[in-house]
Amino acid sequence: MNVKVHFRITQDRAGLPLDFAAARRFVLGENQSVEDLARTQLAADYQVPAAAIEICRVEQ
Image 1 (spheres, one colour):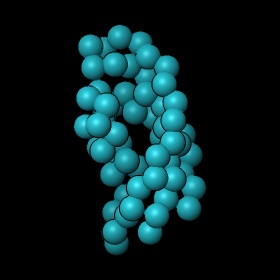
Image 2 (cartoon, helix red, strand yellow):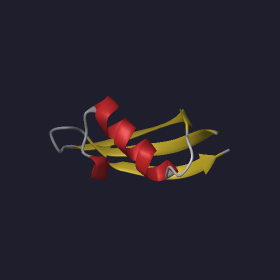
Image 3 (cartoon, rainbow, N blue to C red):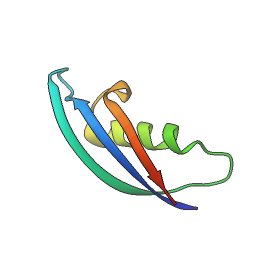
Image 4 (cartoon, helix red, strand yellow):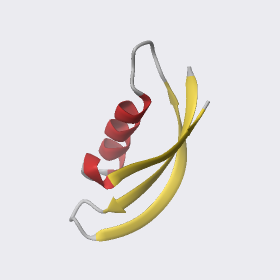
């Protein structure tokens, strides 16, 4: 399944406040949580803690 996730990043990798919002498409397999997968991949891509990622909306 292909979903579009709108997200915000609230801090950079140094822990300083940041306000960045965007959207990205993800391909999901069976039995995968959209929020968990998106948060993990976005945190790795932007090199920020997973707690800094806020999922705003998920579109299918």
